[in-house]
Length: 135
Image 1 (tube, rainbow, N blue to C red):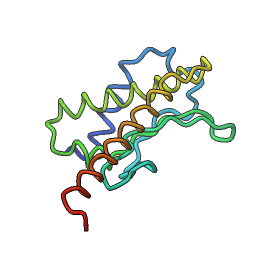
Image 2: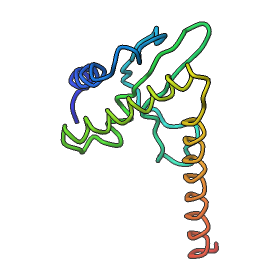
Image 3: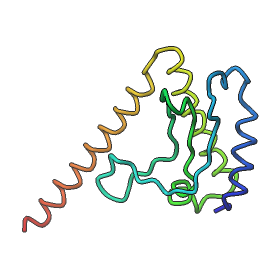
């Protein structure tokens, strides 16, 4: 895994790929935090938050990327594949930003669908485990 300074450089490079228009009202910018963030939806230690879009009246609008979560999930990947995952996450969070500006919630709805699939798969694993060992 790259260190946090190298990941910051990668994130800066990816941020430069995006048009200036995307940054309108993103007053807090993009923050890279060292945290390993377990999702509040996690049913085990198997669901990490890679990034978040925040919008509040007091703090404004900003994107957070979690270095520790990337390390936990993608730490084994070569740098180019890690860069692809970072690009995907950054663009996902920018989509939340742009939808927020437009008053849309399509990606929020899709994120909730993915969480529902995660919970469903976890329940299936639990049922299968109970069938194998009923005690």
